[in-house]
Length: 98
Image (tube, rainbow, N blue to C red):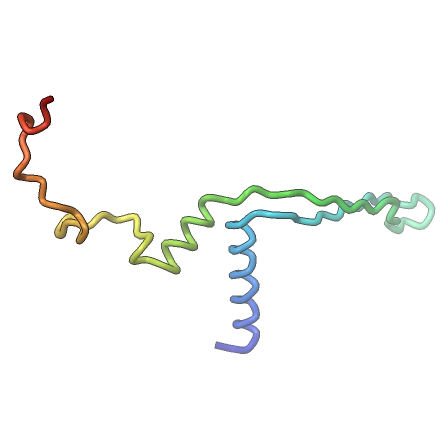
């Protein structure tokens, strides 16, 4: 991988992290007009606004399933029961009556 590739990967990781956690985002809006005399574009207004983005659940799912696949997998393991579950096959409905 080139040195530039590492910088791009770091940028993408930071962007995904911001999507997953949400937070403030600054936007800059420019209003421009065309000068009819010279034909040049003039900047008339520049407005900065800060918006607060909610966390994106899809980014959270993507991050967790790729960073911690054993803990956050979307697939269920049908071959083995969970290690901490008890065998409840000995119970029947009569055991639960009051």
